[in-house]
Length: 226
Image 1 (tube, rainbow, N blue to C red):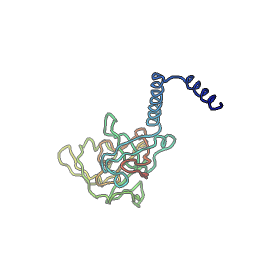
Image 2 (image 1 turned 45 degrees about the horizontal axis):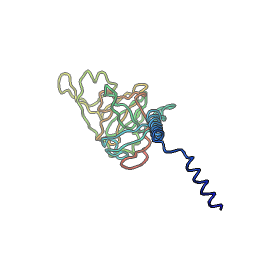
Image 3 (image 1 turned 60 degrees about the horizontal axis):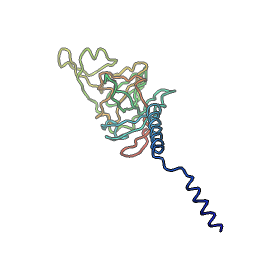
Image 4 (image 1 turned 90 degrees about the vertical axis):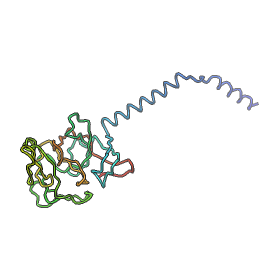
């Protein structure tokens, strides 16, 4: 008798259940998707930065073709430190749509001297400890710059030769770079194969152009970036 009552009760409950409503189901899924998109946008705009590294300029810590995640919050209440790996807007791109990943070498007000394949900061006679380098830096790396450009840079080149009346060939690895206040001097870890501040027309990166501090690489393998 009890079993029959239970069956009747269950049958009644099934009848009282709300029938499947396709419209409500679609609205529910749309709400979930919109919420996920909004959360992803907030994370990527205000909290994290995702960047692709197409070259081997940061070997060995970041391989060519890697993807990295950086924290946008790292410099919200503080400043970049020497040795930080950062994502920033490439200073020679007038539209500021190109992003680079390099290591902070010179801080605001620093004098960065490159000589004999070594980097010296300010008046130090001891070269910067750069155990992260892929290999020792070559003593000679030349580019050609116009005299007008050289006169506009905060750089002293020791090794220069004129190739024409208005063009000069300079050794970027034998130079003194004077970092302006509010700016930073960036270099790659794969120093001999890195297009970095030594080769740029605009050699210094303003703080507000630094997007994030790189925390880790997530593709093609996962590891911390220091």
